[in-house]
Image (cartoon, rainbow, N blue to C red; front, side, top):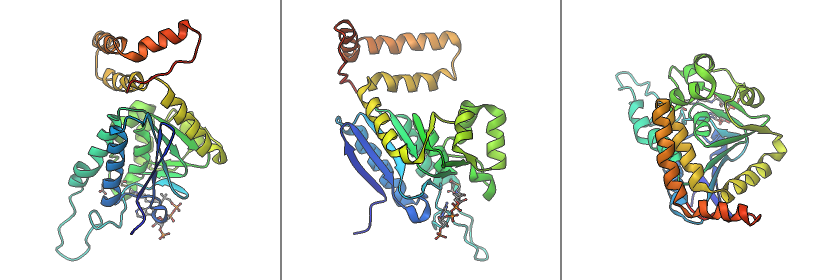
Length: 267
Ligand code: T3D
C-alpha cells in the first residue's frame, strides 16, 4: 500500500495531521487534497478531538499546488487547451478553506519550513500559527503568472494591511518567519528545535479551553469585518446569549468561585 499523504495521530484531545509528501515539499495533489479534507471531516466529527494541529513532514510545510500535477500543469502540445485553474480552486481549495474556517475546534498550524503559494495561505487560514524561526512564507503566485488564492486576497490585507499585502503578493519575495511575525502575519516564531514540542503544548492548552467559545470568537471576528459597529455589537449579544446558555459558562464561573481549574466539555 502507498504511504498516506496525510498522517493522522491523536495525543490526548489533539488531532495531529501531517502533510506527507516531503520529496515535493508537501505540495498539493488532488489525492492529498482529498485525504486532507477527509482527515479534517473526521476530526470535526469526533467528539474526542478538541484541537487540530497541522504540520508538514520533512523540511517544508507546504509548497502550494503541485505544479507537476497533470490537473494543472500546462500542456505544451500544439493546440492543447489550457487547464481550467478556476475549476481546481472551486473543486479543491475553496472547500479546503471553508472546511478549515468552519472547524468546530481551533486549528493550529506548526509551520516547520517553507510555506509557499497555497501552502502559505493554508497556514494563514488556521486560527493560530507557530513557525520555526528558519521557516519562510512566500506568496509565490506572481512568479508563475497567477494571483493569490486559497483565501489570500481576503486574508492578507486583514492580517497585514493593504500596503504590505500588495508588497507580498506582487513581489513574491521570501519572507522569513521572524519578519513575518513582526509585521503581524501570524502569532509567533519559536526556535526550530522547540517547534514540535511548543506546538503540541499550545494545542493541548487550546484543547483545554472552552472550544465552543473559541470557535464562536473566530467566527465573530471574521463576521465583524463586514459589519458596522452597531451590527457587530448586536452580533456579540446574539452569540454571547448562546454561549451564556451553554455548559462551559456555568463550569467556568463555578470553577472561578471554587478557585479550581475548569473542566470545559462543550464543543
Ligand atoms: O491549480 C492551480 O495552479 C491554481 C492554484 C494555485 C495554488 C498555488 O499554490 S500556486 C503556487 C505554487 N507553488 C509554487 O509556485 C512554489 C514552487 N516551489 C518553489 O518555489 C520552491 O520549491 C520553494 C521556494 C518552495 C522551496 O525552494 P527550495 O530551493 O528550498 O526547494 P526546491 O529544490 O525548489 O524543491 C525541493 C523539491 O520539491 C524539488 O523536487 P526535486 O528536484 O528534489 O525532485 C521541487 O521540484 C519540489 N517542489 C517544490 N515545490 C513544488 C515542487 N514540486 C511540485 N510542485 C511544487 N509546488
